[in-house]
Length: 195
Ligand SMILES: [Zn+2]
Ligand SMILES: [Zn+2]
Image (cartoon, rainbow, N blue to C red):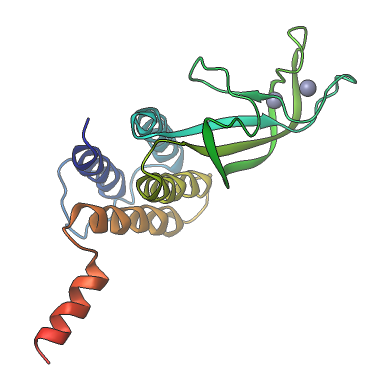
């Protein structure tokens, strides 16, 4: 998948969640009928799908396990869903400090194969392949981060406006990436030309 295609498809799927309508474009119709838990599930699937493809552009998210009840736990064992060996601060990747999540999680710490599932502190680190286009990865990170924030806002009884706000921010960022130049730059140039 080329990056333009990726952005276009992500944009249309996000707008579909916002409006509840397929191919909604920019119709200013808010879907206030879908319960938050359905929206949350849709967004989680969307995030999983587009994070998976982001790998082909060099962006990965790996999980750092900060502590666990195992007394032999040392430093930061790292796990990932890519079937790769990635250690903390692995030199094949750029570790900019970006995080998709930090907090408690029920999971199996990889510090020992004998570990069982426990509640402990984890960090989902965003890392870029050294050879990847770093600017592109940064844009992708910002967009995927907006989706994660929308998911965080999609708890029961939380206002839909907060979900929407994050998703629309993602759409605005994507628009800037799809256009030949960012909207701000375009406006500035037009103002100069017409002055
Ligand atoms: Zn863990
Ligand atoms: Zn551990």
